[in-house]
Image (cartoon, rainbow, N blue to C red; front, side, top):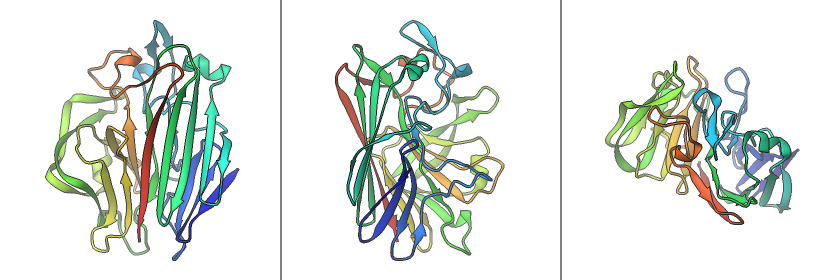
Length: 295
C-alpha cells in the first residue's frame, strides 16, 4: 500500500512493503527526484538495509557460535511493515521479528522507519529496538536512488558529488571474483577536494565506498545549474555511491552505511564486521537521514 505525505512545497510517497520511499516530488514543477524503479536498469528504489549491508563471505556468518545465512542487504526490504502513526506530513512504519527471521538472524528485534516532510526537506528516522535478552548486533543502511540526470537534455557526466568538506581518502576496490572489498587495493577518488566528477567508468568495479571520510553531507548536483539533491548522513559512518555496472542507467544511489559487505581482512564472525552496531537488551538505537531538494 502506498502512503503519501506532503507539505506545501513537496510530496513524498512510501510503500508499506519495505517501508520504501517511492517518490519525492517538487510540487512547483512536478519533478520526481527519486529513481522510478525501472527494471531495465534496477528495480529497486530506496530499500532499507537491515541487519546486513551488502554480502557476507560465501553468504554465511557466525553469531554466538552458530552459522547463519543472512541474505544480501538483509531481511526487511521485502517485508510488509505496519503503519504506527500517520498525519498529513509524517508517517511511521514498524516491522518486528518472526519465527522465519530468527532462522537467518537470531535476534528478536523491532525496527521503525519514520518519514517527515517540511518544505522541500524529507527526514528519515530509524529506530532499532532490541526485544531479546542479549546484546544484539546488526548493520543498518540506506540505499536511495536518484534520477541522474534529472532533466531532459542533460547527461550523467554533467553531474558532480559535492562534499561538505575537502577530502583526501582512499576507497577500497570491490573484488568481483571474491565478492569482497579489498582492503589492500584502494583507489584515491578525492585528493584534497570536495568535488567528484561523475562518469560511468567509475563504477566498473561496483560501488565506490568512502569508509574514512570527515564529511557527513553530500550533494548530487548539476555542476552548472546546481540543481539536484543533498543528503545529510550524520548518523552513519560511511557512504557509498552506486549505479549498475556495464550500463548507462540514468540513476545514482547515495548509500549511507553503518556496516558494509565483507572486507578482505575480516574473519567470518558477525561481531567483527566493520561498523557493527550494538544495542543492549530492552534498549534502542536511533539514526537519521535528511534529503533536501535543491530546486
